[in-house]
Image (tube, rainbow, N blue to C red):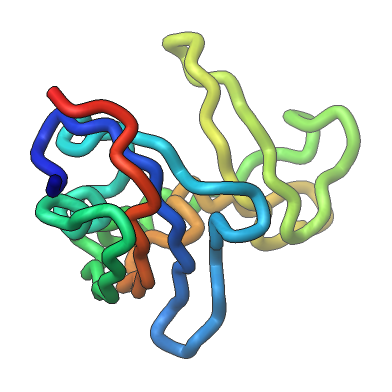
Length: 142
């Protein structure tokens, strides 16, 4: 039996950048479970699982456009340190509340005397992602 859109699956994966740096892996925490075609994972990852059978493995490269999109320089902004309870440090991840009430995550990329530079891009934006995937099992077929 192979995977079609609407199929719920469990997949093991290891994700690396072009320089070989591993950015994520399911092998230490257990397979990722998702429904193919439901928008629960990045498009390129989703498409790679379609057509696989349990036990099959594949290697794919997902270009930035099919992963987390292009890096947007306008998404890097300076914020006054008075916006924080305690001064942040470079590398910190902060959650801010947008005017619509939603939480927005940013990474602190610089801290100066009165401001912090926040990068609202996804940490993997602008990068191609490489995956080694194994379809562990089909949980449910449509």
